[in-house]
Length: 444
Ligand code: PEP
Ligand code: MN
Image (cartoon, rainbow, N blue to C red; front, side, top):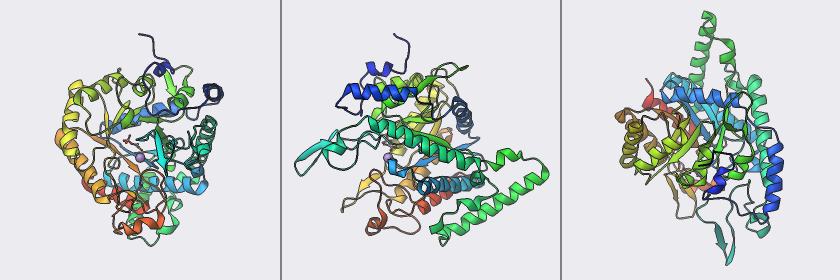
């Protein structure tokens, strides 16, 4: 067998890839990408890995969240800031309620490629390639927009770099200072019943912070800054490959587009290209685990993706649906246990709970999401495994995409601010409610 290389996936069947009209144009773009600087560093990646190792032991908790897909137009100050704000606010509730550090990972700065159930889409007798995300083609139903264009890879790299630049600048200044959580308030929610509760938690935390500083037990630097990490589905293998590099003084290859790339449920077959690519990188790697995954399959994933059995290296992000998780998850937990492999279990209560309304909206019910989340917590408790984190599709904006929550958003209400082009996201309030629900179920 040949040794692993960033291009060795090309020898295996690759699902969900774009069909470019010109190989020469794709190659020229990949060549340009391969000369551009990395978006993240191996130090950051290794730091995340060791924090995830703590999460897998129950000593920290992962909060991963963001859009189903970012659009290039989401590279905008307001949208990015609101996303960071909701993640920060949720993380404060979790820190307070769980009494452990929270690792914040956005689905951000690169979540531009989407798997689709069909390659082609037909509207009024016209058939065109499906929209696969802004990294590949455009959403408009025209031939010009839908034919994959490799120049979009460079634009995606650019948007990811600009988004990261803004996140880093905000994290480096007062915005991410735990002494000033007032910077994270979102304008449109000052009237929300949850806002009161949130502010009580913030006051509580800021009193403890002052107390620790008075005692001299807090290292100022640790507390005055919060860290953000990035993640995206590593779907477009040519793009991922072109930024997969060796790093001086470290062994192996790193994917330097993002800290935490994950493998979607549709592309997790062990004989396929995605697993081949992911088996060779040093980053922590997530795999979506869903209905029908066999014990043998998940055991092979452990072996292929974490052969050295490093802690914090492999995340299983399960997404079964509220009606299936109780039947499917326990056997997989037991199968992983039998391998002796180190894994970090994460609950994605979104992707198994998608449905369509009679008026054609793709939505999710808050109650089903909450039920899967609560069942996840119970199942890990009864199996003696550890739920190390959660994975949500959410936004800091006031959208109406998921049904339910404290405000009782109903089907009729979805049309007020239904904005997603792909999966429905929790809005600000629903996201805060989920964070509270976690603390109520898991808190000490
Ligand atoms: C996603 O996370 O947006 C997604 C497509 O998930 P899954 O692969 O679990 O269906
Ligand atoms: Mn999604």
